[in-house]
Image (cartoon, rainbow, N blue to C red; front, side, top):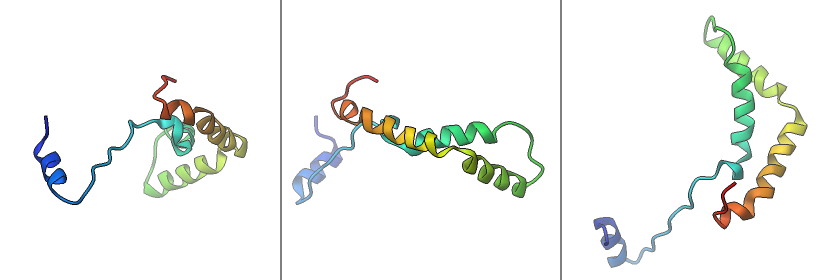
Length: 87
């Protein structure tokens, strides 16, 4: 069943393109942020500057090998995600 939006697109010169389902394994920044977030969330913050410095320190503390591993992990799952294989 066509929605109103589908009808509008069909009647125009435009083409509809749907995004694939979200797959965090294709996005290394998700893995990086997960590690950094875990380093930030422990403890209380006195002020905004304290939070900023904790975030900055947490990002700096993520080892390069972890970043490279995140990228490699994404690359190894890329084909599976495209083929909708459960990871």
